[in-house]
Every structure is written in structure tokens, then in C-alpha cells.
Image 1 (cartoon, rainbow, N blue to C red):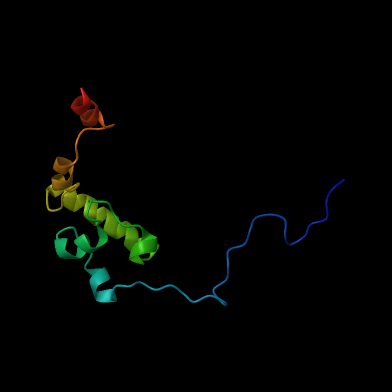
Image 2 (tube, helix red, strand yellow):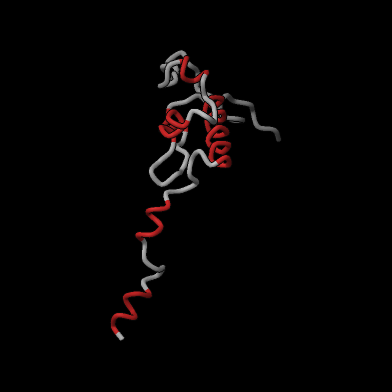
Length: 106
């Protein structure tokens, strides 16, 4: 026997924009048009201190602008304009799994 079709079944619908505020980018349109791998000052705003690319949820960019920004960050890293990670933090860390503490006891 076939079940009667109801609105609740099937694929969930996307929420409409009628009841929700439309999201907009936190950057002015002029700056978004200038997303370029050579604009290091702008790209550093989208990178954490450890060198990770910030998510769309944090940056507030649209999907298209986030993709453009991530691509520009990756290009500038490859050319050496931006670092892949913060090298000073790597030097501060000791060894892994606490082996240094075990050696001090002996």
C-alpha cells in the first residue's frame, strides 16, 4: 500500500527569505571587488594568527566571495607573500606526548 503524500515527507525545504533578514557582506563592495592575491593587508584579515583561513560564518562573506578570498590566500602563500603557518609558535612547543617530563624524572 502506498502512503498518502503529505507536506512533511520528502526533501526538507530551504527556509524562505520572507521571515528572515537577508545576510550581507561585512566588507564594502569596493573592497570585495579588489580581492587579489597581491593585496596582503586585506587577506590577513581573513587569516587567524596560526595561519588558518577563517570560515564563512566568521568572516561574513558570501559563498562566492569566500571562494575568491580563499583562492587568493592560497595563491599568495604559494608565492611567498603570506606564510603557511606561524613559525614562531612551532619553536615554542616542546616535544609531543610529554616525553620531556618523563626524562626529567629519571
